[in-house]
Amino acid sequence: MEYSKELYETLKKADLQESLYITAELVKKNCLDEIIITWLRIISFLGEFTQIYFSKWYDTCMSIISIIETEDELELVSILQVSTKICILFQNSNNYISFTKKPINQLRKNVIDIFENNIKLSDKGKEKFLDIIPKPKNEHDFCFKILCGVISLWSKKEAIRLRETLEYLCRKDYILESIVSDTDNNITSFIWDIFKIFQPLVTPTLYKLYCYKYRKKDKSWKNGLLYSIHNMLYDDLVFEVWNNNEEGILEHINNITEEIWGYVSNNTNENIDELEEDIVNDKMTHFETYIPRGLVSSVDYDNKVHSSYTSETFSTKTLKIKKKNKRSNKKQNIISVKEGDNNSGYDNVEDENIYNTNNFEYR
Image (cartoon, rainbow, N blue to C red; front, side):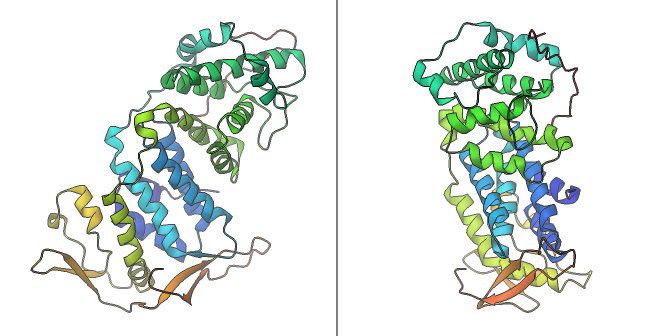
């Protein structure tokens, strides 16, 4: 499944107006899967950064899962909300720290000591992970070192080293023949298993996104979902939730969803009025007062932005999306209007397989 490069780029630029317009256009064309894959790519890209606002990021992941798991019908507003949340996350991207891609040998030097130390788990700790440790001795010893190293980094809150460790292991892509996996029999699957036990409140959701429409060639960019977990170690950021301004933006999108859809549905006029760039200079103010394409803006005496739409509006209805029937290739219109109320990466690095079934070593 391909993604929408146009939507990806506008989300990355935090261009809310274009992102919502393109999202609605893709919905109109029955391209919900394309939207979801685009979201997953951009969310995974954010997961590669450090010091992101993890709670906001994770809330966005939960919204995506909700859309994936909803059967039959979706409200259009829930789809536009996800694109809005992603724009807000990129609006704050100046606060994030990116990782330059390091050669695999340099990454190894940064993390190799983690697996050479004689870190021990208590009997109770070992018991928790007993079911995921491979039985063959060579794989058992290797995976146990990985397990101990990851838990040690977590307990010491060494976020950067944990991030580098996860990247190193995923890029090396060690094969583990004896494990059972929903995707591939490799070390990445084993690390997911560790965190599903170790951090059970968040990891299952991220793993579902990782497995969604899984293809081996997508692994390189989907690993960002796994890397993101290191951000939970930043106590001052992990509990940062949507602030009042951001909540106001999301509520504003709720209020104008039907108008956005009305514009997309009736967009036949090339000479439509756009929101002038000089109306607002501050980005966040632009978010709060955003008016969709096709709306004519005016400012009254109390400086509050009002809008009037030039086409039909839906004042007592909620837009619903009907999901495609997966068992049929026949195209169908996934948009319906039902009565409601008004409150309605990294590149894939192919290293040589250095796993020796008789004698494992790091090199």
